[in-house]
Length: 369
Image: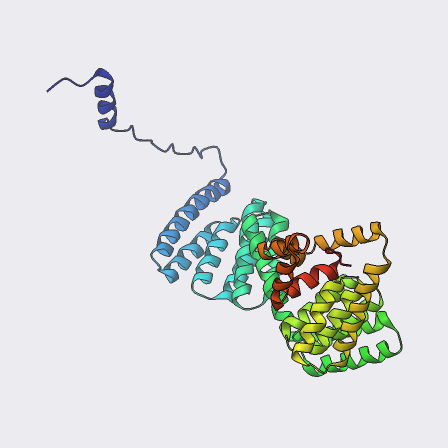
């Protein structure tokens, strides 16, 4: 066979050559006092005991691992690592109280002996996880916050955020009480009748916290928010009320009223019509529909050209209007109005097409007359 190239042969020889053994130099302790020498020897023995404990831990021999760590602690009580390792054993064996106690002791020893901030933070984070297992989120969050003060860690920050969200959810559920919600609602109603809008809002907001799934309370809150011209806040509440109860006619009427206030008359028409689909005799929706239609007619008659243009531009930002204008059927109908009126009239017999065209007129996008 052909001879190996010189470089390959050299590499092969290098691979087969035994590595020179590293000989650990024995530390010279001859210049130390007997006390100092014993301290050094004990520290070395403690590390050996810790390694033994780690091996036992990996083999799930937890009692024996604890004994090894106790031996290390007795030999070197100034090293927090051995206490932290005990805490790890307790955590894995679900002895969370013992874990928390060992973590606290580890941090105390670490502070007394200037252990690295990172090690102290790790012990506090383990204590946080133990508290979390015990469903004690207050102390779990506190431990995480203390850990972050010792040494910031992204994983600990994620744990902290998760527990804060979990606690908020639990606290929110614990706060709910239908009876207290009704009491707050009645107080809000009294303030509303007295035209004390901020106080009414405060009580309605309290009622919402007590009964977040109550559509009627959110409807009342929306009415109060309208009184202080907080239309965005009112819109949020009324949309949530409808989401909770799509058949709540009062909420559809309130939504229409709100849309009239902000001059979104085309939306108001839809809201009132939706309410009338549910309850054809609803007086609020009937009256609202008349007012919205009148407002649209007045706007088409009395607005200047610049005002009409501004109104149409506002409407064009509405996703619903944009969707109608992108509909090829509607585009053809709009074209037919000028080029083929008979075809346009035929198309208008379709209730869906008619509704969309009426919405464009109501929004001021399409001028008639």
